Image (cartoon, rainbow, N blue to C red; front, top):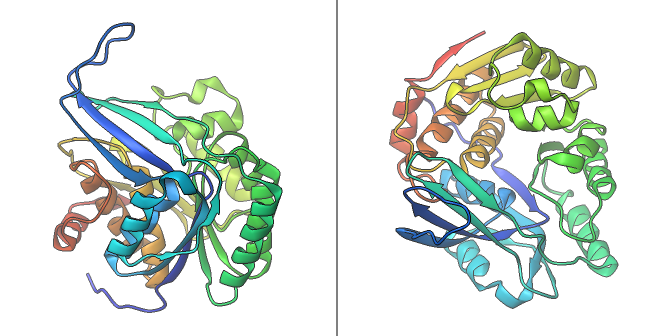
Length: 321
């Protein structure tokens, strides 16, 4: 795989970051005491995870969003360690702590807290920052949930403004934020099957049904028909489906020894973005992104442990229409 570098500047937006407290245990039993075998507390949030992976790949990453002043130190340390430009707007309060409990079966239970409250003044400050960053950046990744004080409509407005300015917006969210974002046609979205079910409000597409059935294809085609250039559907162990003007392409990784699925979806977004930054073709981008995500489930924590492993894994990805 050629690693030709072009314009590698990117902005990641994390409106509602979190400190992820991840605990590993044999089996989670509700209503009783559970013993965690080992744990880690890491700065995270979808956009932060994407920023970390892109920075480790070699991108020039600027990260922005809203960050609570009371516990910002771990984030500041990550940004300095990873050479990520910190353009977060500081707000009063503490950034939320999300709990992720990973069982030995690799099943993950998430307990997500609401996060800080964002004031109108902070939103104005953020909008100014976003406008300034759009002067010399062409690619933006907006990922994650919304904090208290930011509405789905505001998030959609920011996507729309960037798109109208000729920027490529990668958007990865869920629930009302996803629906509002879809309405303004981001350049790329990456829903999973559950998020597609939420969008369609159709329970027959819920997890457990066929991952590559006709119904899923039809939903993605419906999304593409709204004007979204790239619809990327993550299917977990079944791989990734990607629809754009070139048609469908599907990638399937080999069976992996799963340690944790935390951050795998964010890693996939980072891989798709990396391919765009390097002007790779569709097959090369999808193979690399799928390989990156497949390796992510074999480790604890988000990041690229060995780029040579990613390149080798890319050659093991099965890609077809």
